[in-house]
Amino acid sequence: MTRLTLGSGKGSRAWWAFFSTFKPVIDTNMKYLPIDSQLFVQNRKQYTSHLKPNSIAIFNSNDEMPFNADQTHPWKQNSDIFYLSGIDQEETILLIYPDSPNPKYREALFLKKTNEHIAIWEGHKYTEAEARAASGIETIHWVEDFNTVFPMLMNHAEHVYLNTNENDRASIKVPTRDARFIEETKLRFPMHKYERSAPIMAKLRTVKSIWERDLMQIACDITNKAYRRVLNFVKPGVMEFEIEAEIQHEFLRNRGTRPAYGSIIASGPSACVLHYVDNNLRCNDGDLLLMDFGVEYANYCADLTRTIPVSGKFTQRQKDVYNAVLRVQKKAIDMMHIGMILKDFNAEVGKVMESELLGLGLISKQDIADQNPEWPAFKKYFMHGTGHFLGLDVHDIGDHYQPIPAGAVLTCEPGIYIREEGIGIRIENDIMLMPDGSKYDFMKDTPSEVEEIETIMNSK
Image (tube, rainbow, N blue to C red; front, side, top):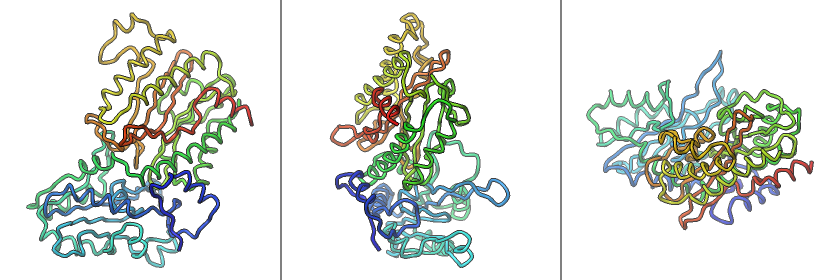
């Protein structure tokens, strides 16, 4: 069968143009196209280089979570096991043991075994050959074999690396499959030396490879197409949820798995609610429309925000505020660099925003003189950070207090929210810090200038 892969080449646009004219037989169980298994082979090599001698590491897939009756929430693979294996299926276990006395178990996958009932009701599951092709791992077992193999290997291992969700935004209220495994393993093998995989994974996942950059570019290209679609759709009287439907349509028809997060389609005063997701109001003539959305492609996320006039033309006040935000964003992108610390970067961008708010008459020099250093005057109108890490999760793992390495991907999303005027404006691009010091803007072709937006909106 024909297998397409992503590499360094001329980037994802050339690849996407090729795919749009050629429809091969695709050997994948997913909506997205097959990924070069070398991505996962290299990721495992990087991970094992950080392990102590004679260490075994275990990663579990996410649970399928029930909600009502016999239904479950839409399932997404655990980001760490996907990063290391490329396996996108529930009930999966990854075992890594570089110093295994049996070379067969230096790395192994344990997968859900299919049967006729599962095939009829749920569909196809990985075969052993498909799992080898996707992951680059030779040893494939069914998951019921794990409790035989694992104790055998634990007799030889000294250190055990266990995985936890240590994202500083995480709020975990249910015991995950990894958490249950940790409890069971420590009870069964109390004398081993236990270690954390999370710090290693955070360090590795922060730095994106060329394969990951290409996958994220596809996600951003699909998101760009959705944005351009709604530029030609929005008009006074349309409902926010109708706009969301147009976005979802474009996501799915371009092989997107799902929205990377709940889409924010906020018109008028709702744009001043930072995490507005009701999306149930009518878009009125004279209002601004803030749209914050992104697709997930091959588990990688895009994160875009644009603000447009519902009527197709900004008022002078709207244009003045919009251009102030755009200037802040451009300066902030210029300020981004390898080695910066995100906390310090946010403070520096705040000073740029302070100047723009002075120019707009929203704050005064006296406000600045009297400000609380813990909550500067500009925070009244720009109350969130300038950016966050992006990758397999929309709020991806990364250290906000350490120098940011080459290869990191960050959002850049300043905003101004004037509740008393019903104006909320945010502009967001996704930026990769390249090893040569340059910035790779995944959304450089996604219109953000006032003139571009108005021209497209009025050309329908």
